[in-house]
Length: 299
Image 1 (cartoon, rainbow, N blue to C red):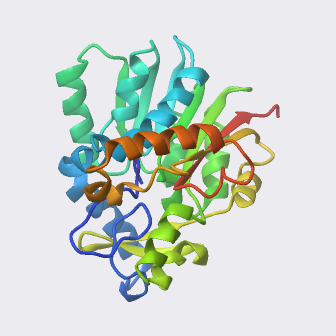
Image 2: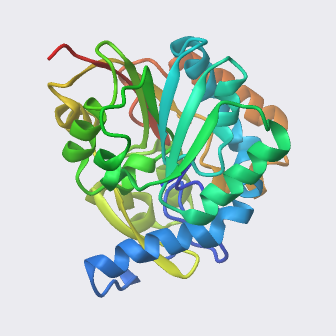
């Protein structure tokens, strides 16, 4: 549910994709409402540590790849809606380009952390943080229209009804507005190879089940892994897909940070490889994430 939503380092030795770990098939969730509550509580607990775990890590260069697209897509003077904003990292980046942001998240502590960061780093920035889950997006400012929208690093992977989220989003952006959605993929090549090398076949292919219940600290979180085709269908016909970019095709998921921080030159080389192959059809959907550029279609 956040910027690099499932790229969280947890205690223990098992990891679920870019998310934290634990054995996916052993986590027990007694009721749907409990799972939803646990999702919010999990990210509340993680708020203070989140930036240290991902945003400031070397493998956090995945974020830099997304930021390049943001800078090329949105324009000064735009008002952008951000979903699952986490600690406000993306919003603070956007205001540097003269873009105002309404940033939403379902975790109260994430929003608190984001507001504190804004007050310390950019007190005059045009950022408004809203405590709002994506499932309640239709309640945001009735009649308001934004010049674009952003849902970064796997926030949409925690949305059970992607069709409804897309419909709600369509009612909040202007015609022709760009909408950038970054999701965890159904298959991550680097993750699969890593776990196969460690003889953990179940973990290597755990995303292939499309839905996994994973553990974030002591809490269960349900994660959805839609294919590119499924996401396009959910956003159609209100949105047209303009491009798909692989994020973290060669650069490994952030839970491998403790290992790869020892080899900064290797990470630099992997980033160069990403730049060369991330737009190719064969590679753009086998990275840790895929960044989709949608455009609001005419009614």
